[in-house]
Amino acid sequence: MMDSDCKTHIEGPYKSLQDHINKLTENQNSIVKKFDVLTNNVDELRKIITQFSEKVVALEEVATDRRRLKTEIKVLKNRIDELYAIVKEGKEDDSCASDVQEVESCHSGFSSSSKVTMTTGLDRDTIRSAYEDVRSDASPTEWAVFKFDGARIVCSARGSDFTEFRTQFSDDDRAFGYLRLQMGDEMSKRKKFMFVTWVGPNVSVINRAKMSTDKAIIKDIISNFAVELQLESQAEIDIDQFKDALNRAGGANYGTGIRDL
Image (cartoon, rainbow, N blue to C red; front, top):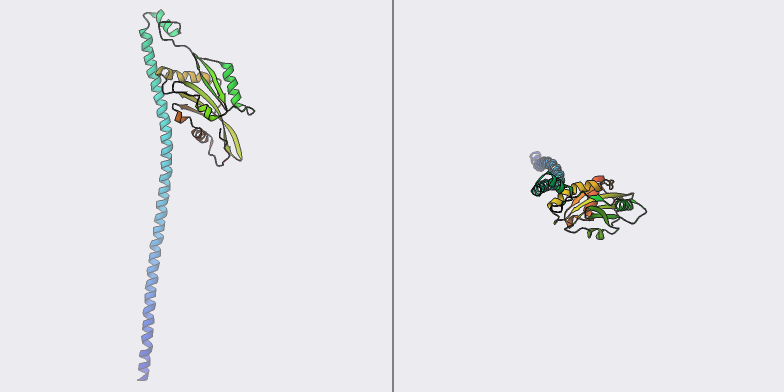
């Protein structure tokens, strides 16, 4: 009788202990399953982050393509303006000519009754001098501006202050600029050169059309530069934009050793 009571007394706590063990096992299994779910979620999150990173890269490429497309549209617009001006000028020349002799006079630039179309000339000595001055490491001159004096392109100004450079271009002007900018970082400072074409918003269509030919003439002297830009508004005459264009042309800047103009 006592053996039976003792057995019952022992089996009770043993059963309770076994129940606790079973519950712990169930909890452990539940934790393992949840950990597996968490691991799967982390893997999914990694995939989402990877996809997001790829989309960010794609957006950056789209932004670059948009800038390139904007530049190409501007070039195309200028080409259309040039073609329009050529057609318009041809009609004006036809209207002023009554025979072959008069047509030849109209195009030669010697007819006082027609619109004079003269070949652009260069003040080669002053332009070359300014060009070499900007390129010289021994010179403080960091920019030169070239404008039209009648039918000739001359050097109109030189300087070293970028603020002064910006003031050289008015809404009625056609002009060219040549700049020297210091680029690079603390370990690799270097000079970079830029050529800019300025066509003010008030410039006539015909004079806009002539800029392509006139630019080719002055580039016979100003031939060494890393970047060429066409500017049509004061907002585009920005030193940060200039340096950004030079960086894109020649590689990224990683340091802080840039000397502003």
